[in-house]
Amino acid sequence: MLGRRKPFPHGILSIAVSFFSSFRSLSSSNPSLQNPNFHKRTTLNRNPRNISINKPIDSLTRPLRHTTVAPEFRYDSDSSSLEISQISEKFSSNVTSICSLLFGPIQQNRNLDNLLKDFKNKLNSDLVLEILMNYRQLGRFNTLEFFSWAGFQLGFSFDDSVIEYMADFLGRRKLFDDLKCLLRTVSLSKGRVSCRTVSICIRFLGRQGRVKEALCLFEEMESEFSCVPDNLVFNNILFVLCKKVTSGESIDVAFAIFQRIECPDVFSYSNILVGLCKCGRLESAVEVFYEMGTAGLVPTRTAVNILIGELCELRTKQDSIEKVKVKNFCRPFSILVPNVSTKSSIQPASEVFWAICKLGLLPSAFVITRLISELSRLRKIEKAVEILKVVEDRKLRCVDECYTVVIQALCEVRRIDEACELFGRMVSQGLKPKLVVYNSVICVLCKLGNVEGAEKYFELMNKKRCAPDNVTYTALIHAYCGTKNWEAAYGLLMEMLGFGWCPHFHTYNLVDSLVNRYGRVDLSRKLEGKLDTQLLQKYCKAGKLEAAYEKLSSMISKGFCPPIYTIDIFERAFQKYGKLKLARELLEKMDQVTQRSNSEA
Ligand SMILES: *[C@@H]1O[C@H](CO)[C@@H](O)[C@H](O)[C@H]1NC(C)=O
Ligand SMILES: *[C@@H]1O[C@H](CO)[C@@H](O)[C@H](O)[C@H]1NC(C)=O
Ligand SMILES: *[C@@H]1O[C@H](CO)[C@@H](O)[C@H](O)[C@H]1NC(C)=O
Ligand SMILES: *[C@@H]1O[C@H](CO)[C@@H](O)[C@H](O)[C@H]1NC(C)=O
Image (tube, rainbow, N blue to C red):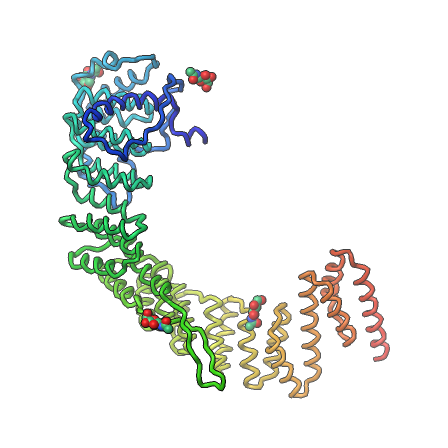
């Protein structure tokens, strides 16, 4: 593990760096090229090398051509001009020979000029690249040493692909000083720095959060390396600037760069979109979005997600709390309500959604759910339903969640027919409504006095194996009480108590007074006994011994005898706290009372 974290032993670094210091002396001969941002040098350890060169020390890194890169960074595939198989055949013998020479026993002061003299006039870009690509076997030291040597042989007039490979190699290892030296050396020699090379540097600098340096490199590339930025460079610098945009200042810089692009492409637009969203300039973001549409371009999905997501978010952020005076009471008072009149950005959010949809793209499930929730929350339920249809048609995995949100919203405003219709559609599609959906529908039906309707959903949920909870039961109990159906209300309350759910006091009272009104004092007593038992168990489980003791005492005095199961719980709770004796005494008293009442009976 340790070996992997420290990517290379000191020995290799020191010698590798000493080679690059020859670049440095070359480039530093021109003081105008000095870039203040590139002078944080690593302290060099000049110990002689002391490692096993055979170890694949670079196992963590991969060469450029095998990497998957973010779409913003995707290289043109046609410009990777090398066909590996071809090269391999053409050069394999030379590559193998050079590699085995480099690989051989390491001597102090090895002289590559001597070692590789047979190959000097055979050197060319393809051969060099082939050898660089063997870096895993060669190790970092040999790779860099060979590259330096070959570079000086050829005046660094390599093909772009070689320099790009090296830039990637150094970038991955965070050798940014060496990277900069490479660019200078190449441009001061007979070589050429390509846009792609600069892009690679910018990308690695950005990845390390060295945004200033990336920007510096971008600004100076033309003057220093005579390299005019192309879209790839623009897009990479925009990506770096926009990804972690924090201040208005940095987005201004990014936007200025964006405007310099003659013909911005999908990635230029998408990057700037992301940046504008991240710093809260949503109006400009929406403008850029539509401008993009005019240019016939579709933003990346990431950009779309961020744009719609932020537009929904803005709504929530802006929601202020408003004080409202209530005057039509004898003593006026104020209540706090959300200020929903706040300028909404939900409209642009759904417009952007539909524009995107027309272009054949959809935001992520997460963002769609968010949009539907936001529309539902603002009671723009028709709009939410329209989007739900898209979700349904495309069989997105958020369809469940979206149905839930919309049905709940419809229930909240008591549009029960529409809610039931959507519910039916949901079931007919093989979806399984969750408990909250059943509860929403059942509660509204109950409140509207449609007990039969509520019963149907209650039966359905049992059939579909969706277990009801205390909310379901409470809603139905209240509805039965409303229609004076005391038997059903009593039955459900007993069932609820049987599940160990304590009803709210109000619910209990409602049923109790109803059965009393119908002369069923026996049932009232049964209810009381069951509730007491339930409470007793609750206290015992919570370790509230005093409350439990009092509860049982009062039960005894009322002539209730809890079931054996509950008595066990009671005993165990007291035993746990070393008070079994106390419990036993009370239980004995209970036995005496029950025996007495039995003999009296
Ligand atoms: C080389 O490594 C060995 C074992 O890791 C160590 O004992 C020795 O001192 C090292 N030599 C130098 C010159 O660093
Ligand atoms: C390099 O490759 C060429 C072509 O395969 C071959 O003729 C030549 O002998 C090789 N050179 C060495 C030094 O191996
Ligand atoms: C509610 O928001 C609107 C729009 O932002 C604003 O004009 C109005 O003053 C706000 N009301 C209160 C009481 O804050
Ligand atoms: C249902 O139970 C939960 C937790 O047990 C409780 O917070 C809630 O108030 C109960 N609701 C009703 C309607 O009984």
